[in-house]
Image 1 (cartoon, rainbow, N blue to C red):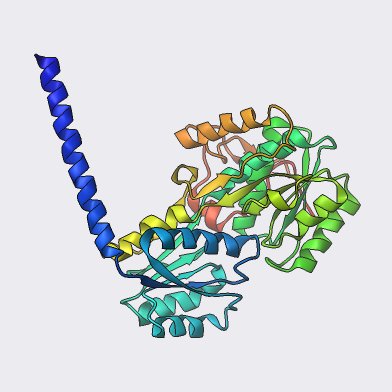
Image 2: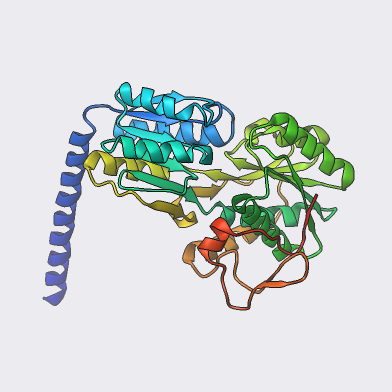
Length: 362
């Protein structure tokens, strides 16, 4: 008898839950009946196969789900952005999305000037009542790409083309190197700077410098130029990408990439705007949210790599491991993170000015 009652209660709960779900869906359908104009401001072209395209492509997916009308402005400089924001708002945009740190001052100013407009600023640091900033813990995925590189290299010399020595880039270099060293203690990661995000010529020069000075057989990058991937394909060395999966363009050299799934952020948070439930804050989301991911491993990777990566990814997703758990030494032999300790978010975001053992910067 008790079993029958339990089943009946479960059945009733299922029906109620279904009704609630249907009601919520109907409400959201009503909200999205009319197209909502959204302005997207990009620091580069929307088809760059990199950072900007990752935002554009994923926001289009969100637009299909929520019935948004996207007004995209490409290659907008920091000096131009305030004027572009005002043009988009004058054109009816109710939500503004911008994709670079360079827009910080303008986004804060615009949010104060237009309190009825919702603002989303990728890589920004200041938030308010109608302004949210957001990024992902991409260092978690860079650690996994380090495992791929560490198992792939035969020379134990890995190249890293990097934009500039700021906290964001440094924690990526460090995370990648810790991944490399976890499977290959003999490997070294050589870093060459470009001092630019999107400068193809600077990225080419940095890549060629690495190849001239070292016996590099695996190359990765933290720039928004895809030039290093082209050189790797041409020179016959393996590459690991960033921002999006470009494996189709580099069939003989591409291994995987640390990629952004911005739709996983845009869809729920822009829906809150439509529902009038927006709360301005800073989001720094991990792999468990789906905003960041490892691109599928290509057939170029060595046997056993997928298993090694999956084992560590499962630990990250379960919360039993994160990248900067001690002990961690810097590249001058100093203990930076003690046994059983973890680095703080504030240090990772704002004060990462050192490199782990195994990194050589040039």
